[in-house]
Image (spheres, rainbow, N blue to C red):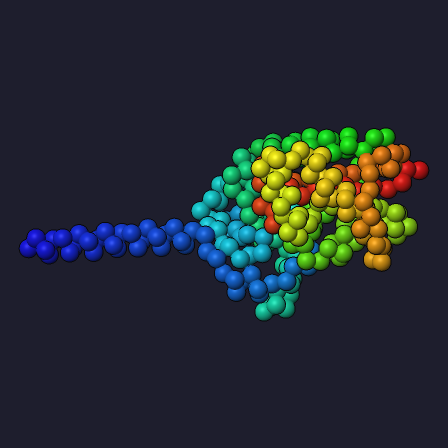
Length: 285
């Protein structure tokens, strides 16, 4: 009898553990097949709008991870900050997903726009995530590295858009051209925009990034070594080989500048995230 009770207890505990594990695993479901069933066309920032959703699910950026049902958090007001367009290979059509977050920023993800319903009368003020202020402050610091430059709103929007558009890093040139065009730069202007980028996936680049994250390098030392030393190419000129020629901060005096960064508190779940830095420069008129 004692052995029977012990066996029953063990079976119950095992079943309980299995159920708990199954429940936890089902909350966030990973599917490489789902991710491979779509092809990213573009990903761009968007203005902040308020929605609710009680159908479908939230997903990670490539749809590989599915979060809980929207119906389980149907009372949540979602705030948008980006959108992306996919080609659905199996269905041979396109779909647009919005990146959303709740009011305190603790929940986020991508929802197909067909499941989103506009909030007729916004129930909460527009949310400014904490990272926006942090990244603006860091951008100002980097701007001060360049004496005599003038902050340019269009260039700033350009590189901010590029942070989101180039998140996968796979179609760098196409992403850049798309952002240049969407921000209203003429072909002539595009041929004058220089881009200094901290994106470096080499072994040396990873070593510098690790040292910066560990506090062993200052922001200026890090940017000087990982970006300024690689030059300031013009992305719209595919045959521009100036990227291998180091540049100095003083040589851009009188130019217009735009800076975008990603800081540790960024909650956009970017693949190419912290500590990416983009600096766009164009000769002043």
